Length: 431
Image 1 (tube, rainbow, N blue to C red):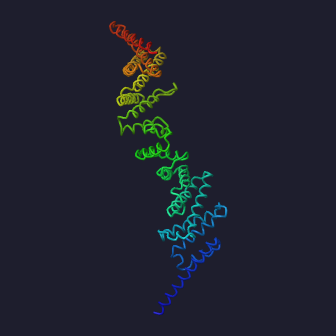
Image 2: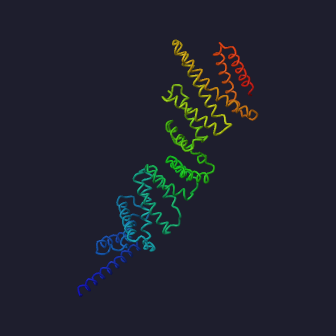
Image 3: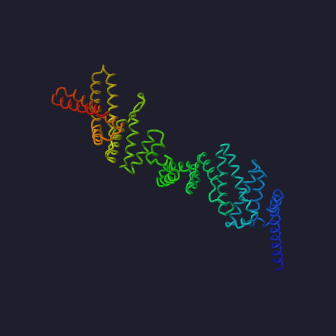
């Protein structure tokens, strides 16, 4: 029994000694004697039972983080960075031992997370200015965590630390860490932060979620951006605009628009844009650019898309004009090829047939466009009148070609001559 009493007395003696150590070291912290406090702390950390209480680790976090700071700011040295990291490890141990972190109610210990935040923020910022993205990100990530803690514990008067979130997002973006960038940009956007410097936040999120095919989040952040920046054209773009705008080449644009049409096959805009991007591919500005190997397949897809667009938006002539223009361009190319093949009678005959087929393919869409123009002839703009005149002129040319081909059939020839005259008269009347 006497042996047990001795053990109890010894244990109490250890506890009393540890309590005295905590108090002595804490007093040195209060007096800002951090180097002496560190020396005594390091000795105490190896004493039996000293590290059994979370106070040992908040002491270490506070002392080490404070030593990383000079009177004018953060020491940008490897030794200071090591002190900050060791202080961070100690703080995490403190938090694990006491998730409530009650000791942070003591103003002496509040310097621990404050200085750890400052250490990681400044060190990360230095790397940011040097464009050392990979080195900067883990530091700024920890700065965000400490910022959140300081806000949670009301140690700083702010609801959102925009500076650290902005830097963390920019650094993550430049480091190629898109998911992390979205996390930080998203926090700012969800707080509806606004101002000249924040529009890019909403732009990034809108583009990111569209590429991820998360159209719910896409529409969410687009609506935020539109409300906060009503003068910006960016947030007026719809998903079709983004499908085309975010892709750099024809195959990417084609795939993106077709993906949208898979969920909304009757969309006017998606069908119109699909037709237009194929039109541009089949009618390149550079005459030397070769047509794609699947040009015939693409042509069928283009025509179908324009007719679907026309059905979705009755009274709009653009889809028909695109189809007509394509086949007129095709006829011109065939005619050029025919002139170059004069010595090959069989080839010329085949090309003549193709030329006639191309002209004929332009006839129906141009006629539909002419009907729509005629229906609102009294209110046509100058641009519309130019298009109307072009359509009537090409229809006259098509009729003239049909007239020539009908030279062995007087009745058929007269029919096409009359139609040619009608379209020419119309073209001449449009002023």
